[in-house]
Image 1 (cartoon, rainbow, N blue to C red):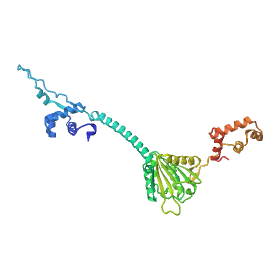
Image 2 (image 1 turned 90 degrees about the vertical axis):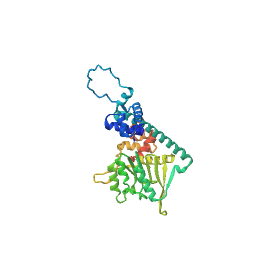
Image 3 (image 1 turned 135 degrees about the horizontal axis):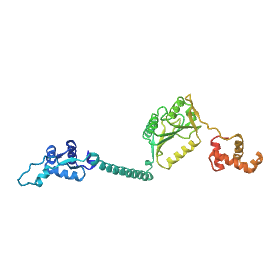
Length: 349
């Protein structure tokens, strides 16, 4: 078990015995483990070199009585036989080694991830099957959608069209679990979908759990993308086909295009919020401009030149430009073209 820390089987058995006994000599260790004393001493030398054991302090002895007999020094064999060994505390003996091994494993795992990503990237260049998999039926689409959400780490984005073909919102029990572990959800609902039975309460429940929800009149496709790495795109679903089909798309420019489509719709979609009575409502932002600025903006968007606007409003051209600059600041844009686009998106006119 401790091989990962650099111990042999004999060293681990010896170390465990010393931990239990606190200290012991080579002969005692050999008796318990069924090893020759010389073999135990070899193991102990290796363990001392690894910092696993140390020599125990000599046990206290009473002072010998004075004697006129010549002193007798213990032989080398006698002193070696009397040596007792104690274990170095595990957090000291094993901690540094295990930390080093963990760092080595982390480094190896990063290298493996880099090599795996490089392999997948190169494989996709030569084999389209590495890029797109076909999900040929309702059950396979449903299974894949649940699997991807169960393994999501950062974000899930999706287009929710009316009349789901594989997984209804009520059946999607993977979303509450993902939200609970910190995964971000952004969902764009088709308005007709919100009018289906039970959808109001279901969307309200998701919003309360942390889902960011918006709505648009119509969505072009059914789409789910997880962690910006893999997506499910419904391919065929119409009245003449018994089973829907979908594509499982991995990281590629095709997936980038799907994400760009989602972001474009997200920008112009209307946020949804839950009212006090539990009803989901479109959160229309109030226009921050007064009637005079709105009239000036309408002339500007209609293509009327600044000089003509000034003449029509009875103010100087410099005042017109100053008021346009103020409107641009309110909209948070830098050009008049951006202002016209922002006004259309926010329905100011």
